[in-house]
Image 1 (cartoon, rainbow, N blue to C red):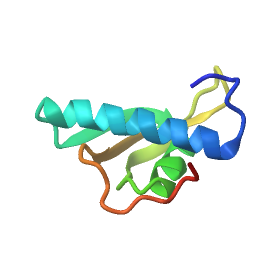
Image 2 (tube, rainbow, N blue to C red):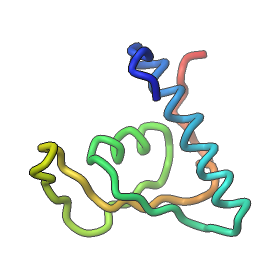
Image 3 (spheres, rainbow, N blue to C red):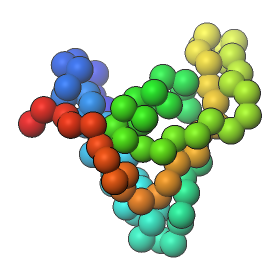
Image 4 (tube, rainbow, N blue to C red):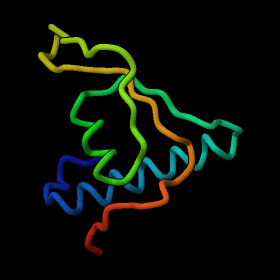
Length: 87
């Protein structure tokens, strides 16, 4: 996502489009779930968008960038209920 997208609603809309596209491509390829190593902040953002995100294992601190990461798993199908993002 571009650093020029600074408005919270616009960033949420961009994230929703990105994740929906990834999930659609994975599902089209036969996947049922997606797994990623991601910053912890993504877990909350995905849940706010209605995805069934589950953390696998304990998070860890990357001493190189100071961020906490975790393995996340989520369905490869579009969530039934999504948080509304203003158009």
